[in-house]
Length: 412
Ligand code: ZN
Image (tube, rainbow, N blue to C red; front, side, top):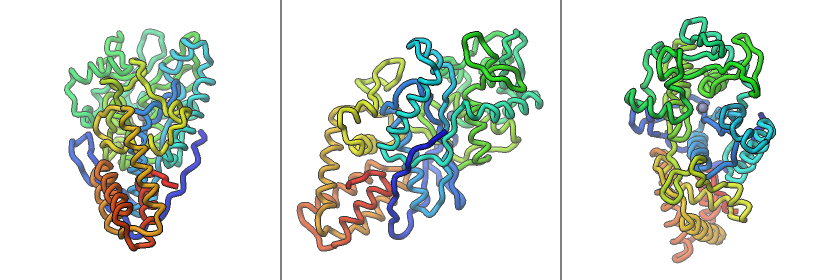
């Protein structure tokens, strides 16, 4: 799958600090400890609708992880998927009398444009579900061979994963079985499907149905489930014990729990990821922004209204990535005025020394991506530069580079 063009990243003097991130599995902010190449997998979109601000906030959070690691001297192998075949996509295509493949391609193209406009560093591997079906099938075959997966005997051709075979099942989310069952039912699971061994067992393979796309494979004709898709794409490119498995907080369960369990069952190794990192949800008018509520603000719509993508980026970074937070018109106004101030300040011939600012922003971002304080640090320098001036002729350029490299905000 084609990715999108990467923004240039200025090189900063010195080196950034090791990144500490909140890990959902342990409930703690812990240091990430990547090798020379940091490995990150972030779950991508199901392309049946345009990128809304909730998506944007999630990809921005992991973009900062990427940037902080690079500033710390690491290469970053970042992998993202696009779930270009799944029930929600097919349902939307049927509803709108659209072709599922055309719908998926159209929305994926729009997603690339949005990511480019928001200056998200692209993944090295951007992989579609359809192009990786063989990879998912290979894992399903292995799970069937070991008895960890089973076929329903109702003629559907469906294959399920037996969660009781996962030794540490539940470690990623830490949820009670009751909560798991509620979330499983809400988020695409089928706890009451007859013939399953356990109510929480997720499907690995959906046997072919009339009027649904399907592919020939060694496990029969059909299509893979979502969790095993991510497992296969991640495992084949990044291996086990990846540094970060990321996504929105609505992926905590079942998606990330199941993908991890699948990977651990296939390899007999543990853990799938050393950090499970989740971004908060963006709300509108007091409710989580979601397709079912219809209260979505689309990045492409804002761009169409001539909103500066850097203002969208700045507005989303004004809140902490883990917090559920509202989107308001006031937030965008504040971001626009903040950007105007920063741009005015970096256009000066000289300003106050900015080396302390670099240290502060590095320290703040290394502390679980504290963008709230990092933005305030830049505010203070800009205010001082504009009101009291400064003698350092290199400072405005350095600040522009810091804001660009670490926060991804272009002031030019
Ligand atoms: Zn995923």
